Image (cartoon, rainbow, N blue to C red; front, side):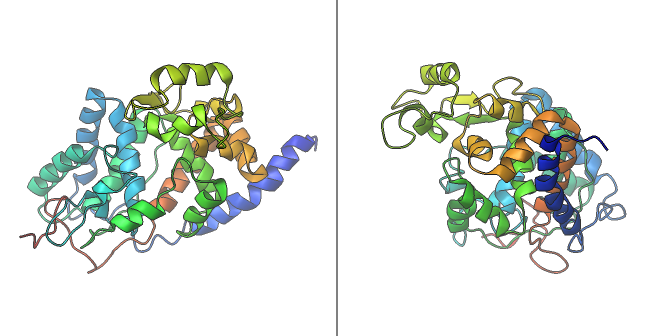
Length: 334
């Protein structure tokens, strides 16, 4: 029974959280992976094929589609509210601070929807397209596979206020981030595992500039940031201007879904403040960062489960909402 004290500490911190995660995974609110097996048997194949084309054309699209699902689920639940454009009755979530000039992948969703409407009109929801596209994107860049529970329906409205207030932000404190997750029934394992989605994708200079120049209001860089990495970032992210200049969230392997994001954090090379605080502001989250840095299989297992947990946030089912024919507008759009 030889086990080091270090391992015991990680186990003590991680195990109760894992058990909590296992209990929460069910029920799936009436969602199940075989939902379209009779009504649209080729649905998953159609989604996968178009996502594969999009990612082959631009690897970054994988991260964009994962993020689209995340930004959908955290506002009003996983109901495709994020896809609605402005109209006489809708103020689009696309104009919110976290989404404007940042959220992307809408054209890929449009393409998938057109193909699905041809194959099975009025059957597959835009919310389910987002859930499937996020899973397919993850797999295509080397990440884990999971069965996606299906059967969500699409919202009849959007919430720009929810989008501005409820999404975890790069500069939020760790307690604020944890609160935003817990409000939706997600726990600390979900916080750290889903943050690992930053193993792919890019971030804008405006999301981390304060770490380079004025982290604590004292005109100095964030002391937890590796000095040479910070110098490298300053070259492309000046004190003013260049807001939309892009930088990889995982500086070592930006196009591959792996656990280097967590290794980078341990080396002081987490790009966002919200990445770094997982290590520096809580023993619980730090234990998970170290566990995932040590064991890619553990990270993959938890990420897959946390994506299912996130995909279960208050879906519309049964006769609630509708199945949009065009993901950008309601069926009774005028």
